[in-house]
Structures are given as C-alpha cells and as structure tokens.
Amino acid sequence: MADSKLVLVSGVKPTGDLHIGNYFGAMRQFVDLTKEGLPAGQAGKYRPFIFVADYHALNTIQDAEEMRRRTREIVMAYIAIGLDPEAVTFFKQSDIPAHTELCWIFDTITTMPYLMRAHAFKDAEAKSKEISVGTFNYPMLMAADILLYDASIVPVGADQKQHIEYARDTAEKFNRVFKTDVFKLPEPYIMPDVAIVPGTDGQKMSKSYRNVIPLFASHDELVKAVMGIVTDSSGGRPENVFQIHKLVRSESELVNVYDQHKGNYKALKETLIEDLERYLAPMRAKYEELKQDSAIVDDVLARGKQEARAISEAKMEQVRKAIGVA
Ligand code: ADP
Ligand code: TRP
Image 1 (cartoon, rainbow, N blue to C red):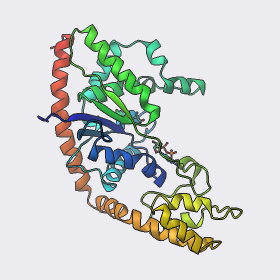
Image 2: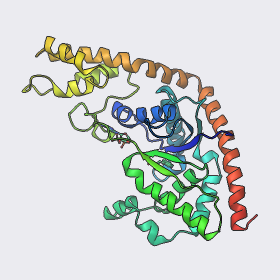
Image 3: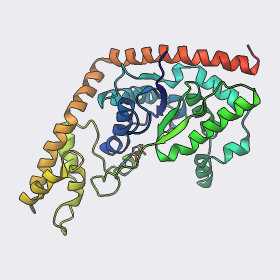
Image 4: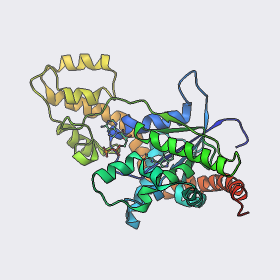
C-alpha cells in the first residue's frame, strides 16, 4: 500500500444468474477499469479494492445456503472474466467488521430525514414495499465501505451516483463534527452507458424476463438459447440475432456474413452459436476450473481479508480516537 496510486473501491452484490447482458453492459467495463485505469487524460492505474457486498445483499437474500452459493459464484465469475486477484484486493464485506462498526458510528451523525431523501428509499416507499431498517440504512453501510479505504474513485452505474454523494456528505460531516480530517472525499466514476443487449425475445435481456443467454452457458444451453431467438422476418436481416452477434464479432465482417446467408436464419444462428462459443468458452473453462478447485476462491478471499483488515483497522483506530472511545 505504500505507493501513491489512487485507491479505487467498489462493491458487487452477489446477485446471480449472470447473463451476457450483464457482462457486456457492466462487468467487462468494470474489470477493464481495474486493469487500465480511467480513460486518457485522467489518473493512471489504481490500487483496487473490490468486495462482495454480502451484508448489503442480506436485505434480500435471507437463506444461508443461497448466500454462500451466490457469494462464491460472483467471486468465480469476476475471476473467470479476467479480474486479476493478484492485482486487486478482493474480499467479502462480512469478513471485515470495520464496515458495520463504522456504519453504526455514521448512523449517530446522520438524520432520518436525510436518509428519507434517498432515491432507493423513496422508490420503495412509493411502491408501498415493506422496508427493512437495513434497506433504509443502506447508504450508511455503503459510505463506510468507501471511506474506510480512502477511496478516490468509486466506479458504479448511474443509479448509484446518489449513494456516492451520501458517502461524500458523511465524510464531510464526520470531519466537521469531530474536527478532524480522517476521511477523504471520494469521487464517483459513472461507467459510460453501453447499448442495451437485447434478449432472445427482443426486449432488454434480463433475468426477470427469462430471455437470457447465460454468461457461462454450456454448448447445449447456447444452442437452445440462440435457436430460440425470435426472428423478425419482415426486415432484411434478423435484427435480434445481429445485435447479439455484433458483440462478439466485428460489424464489418458480419455485414458480409449476413449478406451471404440472406434469408437463411438457421445458418446465421449457427454462425452466431460458433462465434459465441469461441468468445465465451475460455471464460466458461476458467469458471469450471474454479468450481472444481474451491481452494482458489478460498485463497483469494483469505488474502483479501488479510489485506483489507489491516487497512481498515488502521483507519478505525483513527476514527475511535477522533470520536473519543480510544
Ligand atoms: P437483470 O436485468 O438481469 O436483473 P441486473 O439489473 O442485475 O440485471 O443488472 C446488473 C448490471 O448489468 C447493471 O449494471 C445493468 O446495467 C447491466 N445490464 C443488465 N442487463 C443488461 C442488458 N440487457 N444490456 C446491457 N446491460 C445490462
Ligand atoms: N450499492 C451497490 C450496487 O447496488 C453495491 C455497493 C455496495 C457498492 N457498497 C459499495 C458499490 C461501495 C461501490 C462502493 O451496485
């Protein structure tokens, strides 16, 4: 840690059933960012801390077996798509007690009306959902996640921007109330919007619509999903097939392929299967390897735990001093 790289912190929720929409829409960019840093003109490489936000997920996943399985799945998935566990501190939020401890401290300097202005809370309330205290308090746990590591940059989707503002406000408030400069103010990095990946029925690919091509699909699952893509026979080419195809093969090559097989949707789908297979097979192989050898995930998380504990404990010592309990 004794280097001058900017700290990048982000949490991934262990929501499962990953599909190629998640991969092309979010996961791939995220992994590239941890490898390469921001686009030219901005800061260079980072010191990334990535964690599985299992305590955040506890608001919705309330089944021990499912929590364990999904946590491992998300770790395996990120490693399989190229997150380098050697270059990243990759850990479980629940392995680091400082996150919940700091969350409590933040609760004491935060008001209810302030948390009631959070979009996520207002949306849930508008839908008359029953809201757990954990859900209400989500922004404070997230502020703790970010501020413990002196994050400069927090890559998230646009829907999370307000949460980063909450973390900034909380850092400022803590520093002001306790007359200290313990916390550094983080900046959001909103990942650029990429085109929506269509599902097999032409709507947005989403696990809730059952129209997905699973990211780690077996060959048979790929065949089934692709053959099931709804084709619109009125146009010059099957647009849903083409839109998925261009994610895995250059558009200029594809134009020729689609010209050659004009009208022959079966041949085009077979080509798409081959191209998807070529693209996805290495990631699937890596995923399978990780599934077979559970020690790899255990080791990554154990190392992450050790690194994150040391840093977060040092920060908590400053915090405890600042508030007067130490
Ligand atoms: P789902 O709709 O399957 O429940 P999530 O809401 O869990 O997917 O999405 C997780 C991330 O993946 C989000 O950042 C979202 O932007 C991205 N994503 C999901 N589906 C698509 C899609 N069809 N096209 C592009 N990005 C997507
Ligand atoms: N709330 C984020 C999401 O829903 C996940 C998350 C939890 C997170 N803690 C974080 C992201 C800290 C960035 C930093 O995607």
